Length: 514
Image 1 (cartoon, rainbow, N blue to C red):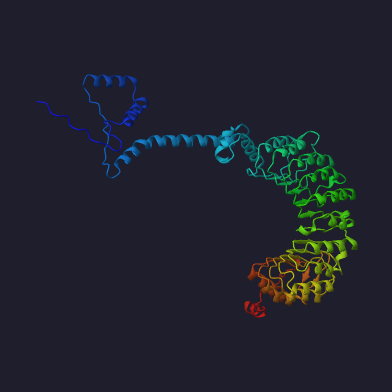
Image 2: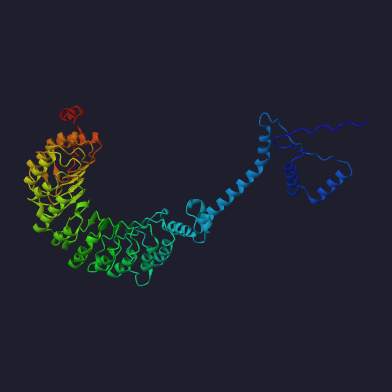
């Protein structure tokens, strides 16, 4: 008697299998690694004639209500996933070992994981090059200062810069051999490759021994880099007399905002060539020609050619300024009073006795850095500075350098510290020259009373000022509570047991109220 066939059960998930292939794989591995071929043959013959039974690995079927199908799929896929992860980990470890063993022969694909967004072969070459020099890889900034680059390395670097379209900062400062190989092609290859770095905004070539010939090679590439905003060429004394080879091309760098040429032994011809190109640099906000003796005679020409109404930094320290030059600087400061952030005229003796002219031109001021080191300031100059501070005209000042002005009397220092109006001050230097010393007992109480009104103070330099034991302890105690760095000469600091024996109660009683 026939019966209707039973309906097959419906499955929403994975269908149960009668056996799992994982078991067969494990059995095959056992046969391959453990059993000999003869033993395997006899075992299979026994199964064929019915002497032994073959174990079939049954599949485990779980209910679909509690996620059994998902667990079943996970348990069957997990061995494959673990195997793939093991292979990936093994290959990664192998690649890292090859990199450490021989950086020169590493395949470029080994850097795909570390480069992240940089997938090109050129980035791999850069990583190898920087690793050899002990530098950190960065696709937007290459800092190779103090690396003693050779001509061969310059050629290699030049070929790699062209493959970095997103490079923004290139610093090869303090490489003495950089321009000694101009004729051999190392430096020329480097600067010629800059024409491909269209995103370059900052170029630093400080203390590289630049010569007029190297400036000629550099100028040709600058014409192709209108986006350059900062150009640092300081401390290159050999380029004296050849700046005109560069200024001819600077007119095309329309976005140049900062030009650094300090300590380059610029001649009068160099400065005249620079003055001719300055009107074309309409975006310029910082020009540093300090520590060049000839600058003192052309300050009035420089400031007349500059866009002074937008200048933020215009240092003229160590420039041998004359009275005419100082007057021109005062006039320029008055025009740039709303933008000027830094005023540095240190080592200019003409300032002594005429500081009032400059301070009056800087009102109201946004200056955050005022440096008047070794300017032969007088007591009247210091009292005028105190009056300006009292009116709050220097409330944004953060750094004040008044060192090496031994002509200032005690009344001048007392007036300055008693004036107030320096709440933003972070750095103060009132040190004396190394060959001189003087007592500070007359104005030290005024300084101690002013310290609570300087909450941002982080450094106080008072080298060569002498004080007795109790005064030194009072100053040290006040600054220690504030975590202020005090710079004094070690031979003038107190080492006697009498100073160490002062009680804490007497120190607190002698402190001014905060």
